[in-house]
Image (tube, rainbow, N blue to C red; front, side, top):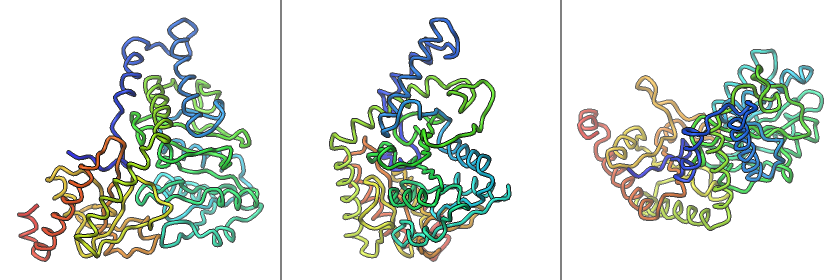
Length: 390
């Protein structure tokens, strides 16, 4: 299989696995214990904290380990809602991850207001509209993702932060897709909270981190044992945290070693080949302000669900721009917010590369997409033919 769904999850880097194994096998003590085994585990957790902090340009004590992006997002929203009850407004966009969308729904259920800033057709937030929505004395939090999971569109975070802070609002960014792929410096671009998840950059699933700026107050979501300086209780997932730290250190190295340029060229080669054979292909998100590893595109009139089945049979793992539920195709809210109609959303695929992919794999995938599109075009309109072909 050629794996091209890395915005969903990534394989564990072998070096990350090697770093984790001793803490699964030998150094299993609770890091809160006072004896030598506990001190060893505690030291490993602290080392990982330093590695994660270095990746995003944070201070070490601004990093809190969590189970991943979803927990971090929920923790920030719950904290801000409880600490600033007199400011009812939460501002998001229509292109947020479901963790933000569902957390925002809870915000509303608890008596707050949720305002949605529109995005341009290129997927970036309309800053003029955002300025009108963010109101002094009313807006508690602006929560906008740094890079979109479906399209790879990179948000203008510096401008977003300036608008929010000018109104006295805090800023949270779901940076799950951005961390490890682009340079982040949270002190230079002064976001108040940032969520990240290890399995998006070759660490294991189930471990992530929350950046909490020194400037921001924080009320923990999980209480009990007082771990993480009383900001996230629960016995630390030491092997996972070690893996996260190692992955963070590796990602930091790869940001500067040419990997980004190689992936950018790989993605562009893939898109060039598909577009040459399918001139109607449209890339979502435009050529600028897009993650170098992500290609979200529409092949008009070609059913994406059928494409996924054909590509899977051809040994290509990727994802669609829409989701299938109960035999019905529901448009992606992200593409819908960008003005993509339901028909085109149902004809959209997402390819997301990782650093272990190669140019020949990208070219093989492009040819597989072309072949699958031609096959779908030939058989669409006859459900019996489609069933037998898939």
